[in-house]
Image (cartoon, rainbow, N blue to C red; front, side, top):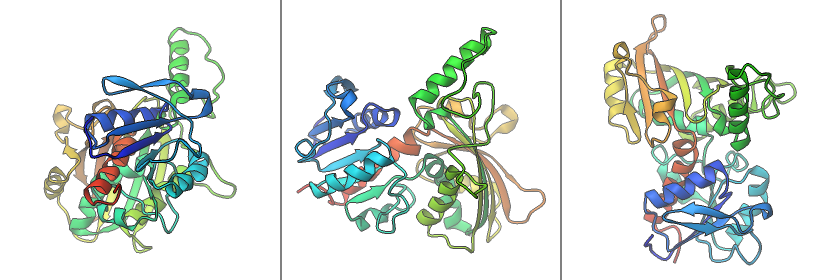
Length: 344
């Protein structure tokens, strides 16, 4: 990859999101002269694919973190809490995929197509939103800009890859066992079997709260990214489904001004990063399988709520590893380069 002399680090390079970040950096020909793969001690020396070759994983320490211009971090909140400030101190701008920094007041939370202007507000760290939030806002933000949002009811149907490789393996193992008419092993990743099941729980319930941490994230992050106050009502229910990749979401959107389904399709068709797939009578609507491996968020089933004025229902699907995580992080890094906010 030819570049501008920038050195880019990827922390968590062996994980599902980290490997996708490396792939997208190569696919989009990110302007870097060097890419460094950072991983834990157990993965030190491991080779990971990058472009036509491989990168050798190194462990972050006081020596190896020097000289990094941009770090894209996806190694878990506890790791980011420790290492993101150290990379910043060493001179890097950190684009962080974990949940740790998202709601810090001094850390901008950015979706590249929604609030790109916020990248210049960083104090060394820029946060990437939750995958469910990022996918949803690709459709929600253009509608809000056009007619204003009054109320949002979200239901998500989330793929197991959002939990990580162990969840994928558990789904595959359980599926093989059930199809072979065998008893699957007791679940270890989720509280119940995920194969051939739907779990109305993503992440955990904190004491005294009937909403999961995932649902709280989606509601809070949506407000922060879009600059919404209490005048907009938001409610979320997040479920885990036996799908490997691709989050699906159902949105019920009440707007301040009337918006016809036809005009909504026009707005979304013109929105960057969105593809309208809306011919339901012929089977034309977004599915998780269609969204997997695709950069755009797919939106369809756009229709009026029959009982509420100024309200539309729609269905969307997006790749949780790409736009929900890796792609958006790389896009934020591209914004930093375009604005001259890194290097030099």
